[in-house]
Image 1 (tube, rainbow, N blue to C red):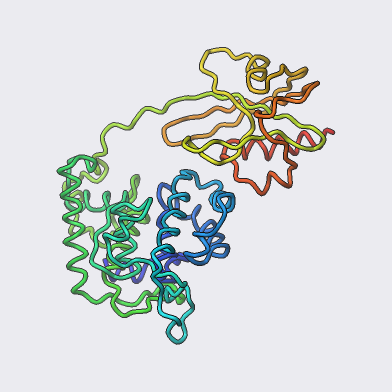
Image 2: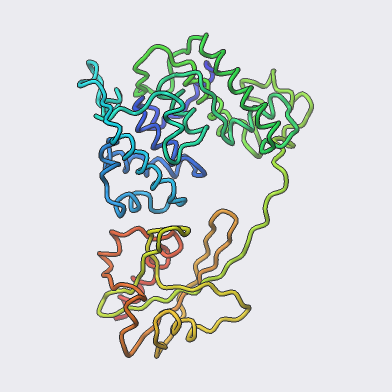
Length: 383
């Protein structure tokens, strides 16, 4: 696996550094998000907030805007809380990087990121997997990791029929991952051959490469569907191949049934400004912006009554806008939209009036960002 990774690793931007802050940001972004989606977000984040201090001091509006479109916004709020906790600890890095290294490559961003597993695990928003990834990738510690890709690789190689979510099977997987990375510690990892900008900063990379190789194998070869067993470096060891059970593993049990939800959103415009509102704390997509809307629970909907309930007055005109489809975890959301016009001002608590330029600086929920992109351009073009 070490040799395979050295020859086949993808050239990902967070692999060009050993700065634990940069690796931490990538791991949080990669939770339930594809690599190709994360790359531009990570690059933008690191340009705007290159250090732990910068992340700690950034305004809530800025961190949400940088995260806009990635979803699961609790991740970024916890990331900032953890950055603030690290800054508050007062621990500092050595004053200058080694010769030929940038600050990001050396990890000398001012505040010192904790190196011990238990300290990292204690930070907000960091679980066992993320703490292990940071410890092994940034510091080459013999700490195991277990994400979806690694679970798939290990359950197939060792032909583990139990559900990985169940306690006994999960414990066995963590034990296997621990044994593998502990043995890797005794080995010497070859140099990466696939790209020149990799910055190992140390000769011992075997734990880092082993954990990354398991994730990489699951992402590129041992995929959920149509795995490429013929080119797998572990094919001679894989019991699932021998038993013709690859497609049956991992055994994840029955998937939850998707839940359909319907919402009606209202786009109100006045003198080139649009009425929008910010979602409160403690709810899904907290602190993000949206058009006033209401969930529809019955088979039929009455836009005029719904609008009156939101704005305090009934609209004098309602025009349908395109429907937006969106998914959040197991929810399949249909956002039915209308343009509304009033003779009087809606009640103040309905929202605030913003110009399109002001709206572009705000972080919107995914569905309402799509609605804004279409509705604002259409309405302004018809004025």
